[in-house]
Structures are given as C-alpha cells and as structure tokens.
Image (cartoon, rainbow over all chains, first blue to last red; front, side, top):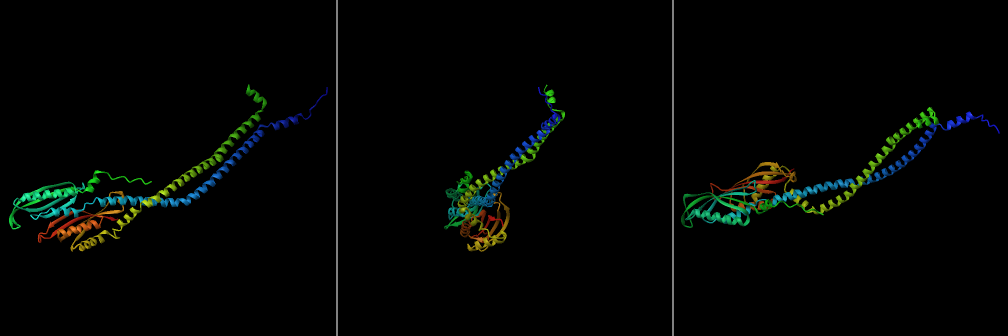
Length: 216
Length: 193
C-alpha cells in the first residue's frame, strides 16, 4: 500500500479557506444583486424618460390649446353675463307700468258734468299702482254723477288691468252752483282712490320666471 | 443544535463577515429603494397623473370650444339687444346729459319748460345689473295741458325703454285752470361709466 503524503496541505487548506471566505462570497452576491437592481433601475429610468417625452408632447399640445380655452371661457362668461343682464333688463322693461294708456282710459271716463282737478299716482313696493283722482261732479244728484264716474272708471280700467279697485276716499257736497248746458246744478267734490295691477306685473307675480332652456 | 453546527462549519470571524454582508445587503436595499427607485417611481407616477389630467382637460376643452361656438350663435340676438340698450346711455355723468336730453324731449312735445333734477343714484341689488345704475329723477312741468302731457308720456314710454315713471301728479293750475302742473318721478337704468 502506497503512502500518500500531502506536503501542501496547509497551503491548500488556506486556499480553500480563502475561497470559502463568506465576506467575499457575500460581496459577490451583493454585486450580483446590485447589478440586477441597477438593470431594473435602468429599465425604470428608460420608462420614465419615455413618459417624460410623452408629458412634454402633451404639455406642448396643451400650451397651444390653453390660450384658446382661456379665451373661450372668458367669452362664455361674457356671453352668459350679457344674456342674463339682457334678460333682467327685458323683464324690467316688460314689467313697467305704462301711464299713457291709463291716462287715456281715465280721460275717456270723464263726462261733461264731471271734471278731474288732480291725478296723483305712484307704484307701490308691492308693484301695485295706486292713484288718487280728485275732481268735481255736477248734476241734479251730484253724488250720483260722481258714482257714475267711479263705476265707469272701474269698468274701463277692469278691461286692461287686474285687481282693480276704485273707491271713494271723500265725497262731499259743495255750496257752489254751476251752470251745465244752461241748467244750474249743485256740485260735489270727490276723491277716488284707484288701485290696480298691470297684467304683465300680475302674471309675473303669479308665476315664477321661466328657467332658461338648456341649450344642447 | 443548529448553533453548534453553524459554529462548527464557520469560524467566528466568518460569521461576523456574513453578518456584515447581510447588513450591507439591507443597507443596499434601503439606499436603492429610498434614493433611487422610490423617487424615480414617484416622479413617473406624478408625470402619469399630469398626463392624464392634461388629456382630460384637452378632451373637455374640445367640448367647451364647441359649446362656446354654439353659445355665440345663440347669443347673437341678446348681444345685439344688449348693445342697443347700452347705447341708450351716452358717455359721461348722467347728471350732465340726462336733464338736457329730457328737456329737449319735452320741448319736441310742445312742452317748453321742464325742470329735471337728480334725486338718488344707487346700484342695483341684482348681480346681473352690477354694471348699471338705478337713478331717480324728479321732473316738474309748470304748465301744460292734459292731452299734450298724455302724448308726451306715451312717446317717452315708447322711445325710452329704460325709463320708468314711478310717480305721476297732474294738478290743475290755480292761476289758469285750463292748464295743468305736472310732477313726475322717473327711474332710469343707465350704464355705469
């Protein structure tokens, strides 16, 4: 049986020891993982750069569109403001009380034996029109003449206005005698209070303002 | 048992080096995720959000542009009318131009004398009329007759849509009963200059 002598035993074991050095192995493993992580990082960085490119393109496109959008939004606000202001102004114009037709109707009610000496009227906070008609009436029965005028005013105004009320505030006989168509007649002084609503104002108060149609 | 086998297999120095390697590994992972990959991902995500946001804005902007075009077409009547109503208020302070204009108007209606004065000038409460002023004026006409003032009022109401008569008083003149004295209160809607 041959005898084997390993004279390099110590050197070989040292070399094996060096090869099995955990720090060295660990460093190699770390380096390997580091390389993988680096590659993964690079892959992510590439994707990020690609997205950055897309972002730049989208931003450039937006930069072209944005001034148009801002101008369009401003224009839209302006137009909506104009439309709503015009609508409010038109409502105000439509809901005005026209005094000329009222005066015309009252003037037509005045018979030759009555005379209006004063008209005082105004529009109240409730949008009702309140008018005071002051005058004198002459006739065999001057109070009846004044009552005729009241009824005629009520009838005539009722044709054009709503919620018409015509009432005597005062009605008193006067001592004065006047000559009407050759006959001497006693006189009465009266004050009529008239309250009424113009048809448009009445309908506006009864129904809420219609909502604007949605534009498709 | 395991500890014994580990100490048998590796020396103390080797175990220390392995521990060092493990610590190094975790430090590497921490640095990698905290200082490299994390910020990169955050930046990418924020860019994706920005892209989505901008694309959404651009999509809605196209419909907005279309809406504005339609609105422009539909608002043409209102725009014309608005311009016409604005044109009823000349440049300058109303106190400077309104009384002469009313005097001239009544002069054209055969009413020679009309005193016009400004009572109040205030803003409207409606937000739509923020650019407009609500002025109240008093008009005294010392001498006219019923038919003339009736025609004048009719013409005023027809020609001046932004003027509204809020009070009217007609009284027989004491000196000459065939004539009437007229007082009026007007409310005007004028552009704020």
